[in-house]
Image 1 (cartoon, chains in turn orange, blue):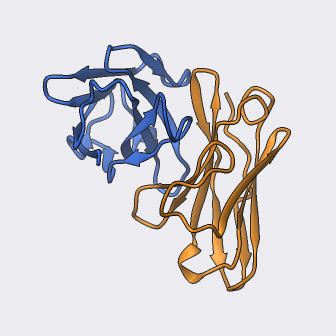
Image 2 (cartoon, each protein chain N blue to C red):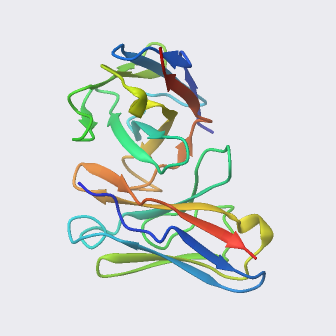
Length: 109
Length: 123
């Protein structure tokens, strides 16, 4: 079972939008609508930002949105703010095992 | 509101067994609502799912670690535990416990995380 593929880095200026991709296979991302995204600040535990591809937990700003097309899921952060600078990980159900992406470091310029 | 807290030794010698416990507060581990999970993160690297357990004792493990991992549950103490045998330096990581909903909201996602505990494998 290979990890999901994410770009190692992404960046944008305050107020801009950035999209992070997460590519898997038909056995994980493409096969289930159970893709989730996590935000992790340095030294902190990951925080759930998106679940079931595009749903936001209560308290997560609507600047964060998720989508999926085929075997690739995406996280879009609109109206970038300084506090959005963090590592972002995708995850997908893959049968009986969840798998994670390698992570993307988002830099707010 | 459910909260999770990891505990255990921060230093383990190579070839020995790593043992960690996660205490669940604010809810019952026997509620049936969650799979109780372990996830790890080596320094500077990404997240790796280790496995999870249902309160009944049913377990699911990452195939890459399955031969060395045992996850157990103690419903009387509202705790679940991780044992990883024959550890090497490659097992040095922050270990997190997390909840993975089995029904209701947040399906297919790790919705609640412990703060994590750093475990170093070194002689």
